[in-house]
Image 1 (cartoon, helix red, strand yellow):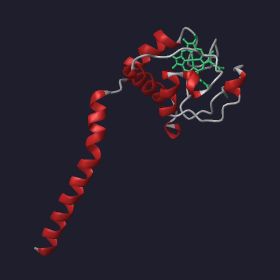
Image 2 (spheres, protein in one colour):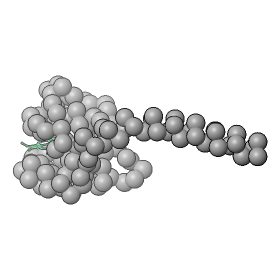
Image 3 (spheres, protein in one colour):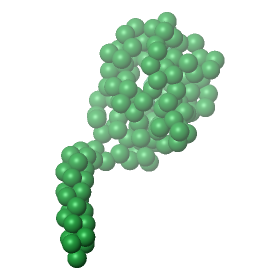
Amino acid sequence: MMVARTFTRRCAGLLTLAYSMALPALVQAKALVPEVSRGQQLVESRCFACHSLDANRAGPALRGVVGRKAGKAEGFVYSDAMAAAIHTWTVSSLKAWLTNPEKVVPGQAMNYYLEQAQDREDVVTYLTSLSKPAQK
Ligand code: HEC
């Protein structure tokens, strides 16, 4: 009986803790629910003018970019600034890049950005879905 009660109390405490930690994330997720299919449409309509998934065009191939070192897609000739970049693309650095590329890599040659946070969210979620799980 004692054991059971202690256990219940401890569980309740843990639940409260979990709830208080999850709440901000839930509120945030509600504001920006990422949608892979919408992200795919956006990449095809907004990025494929210069990029494709598997071939280098005006911009480097985008498949696997999450977890890839910046400025290192095989066979693509980058701007000097991008070639000298030392970061690895993550969800947050990609969102920053798509907000203002010049702020992430001054001197870069993309000069294209997405105005809407929801669009950036969806595009990066889609790009992440194309990367190997280990690279997320
Ligand atoms: C007007 C052409 C153009 C458009 C449109 C464009 N890009 Fe780019 N992108 C480039 C170029 C050029 C580079 C290489 C920049 C450099 O070398 O400084 C680049 C680089 C990148 C990189 C860095 C890749 C790496 O290997 O380090 C990412 C990520 C990227 N683009 C994503 C996107 C996404 C996502 C979109 C659509 C929302 C998009 N781009 C739209 C031209 C474009």
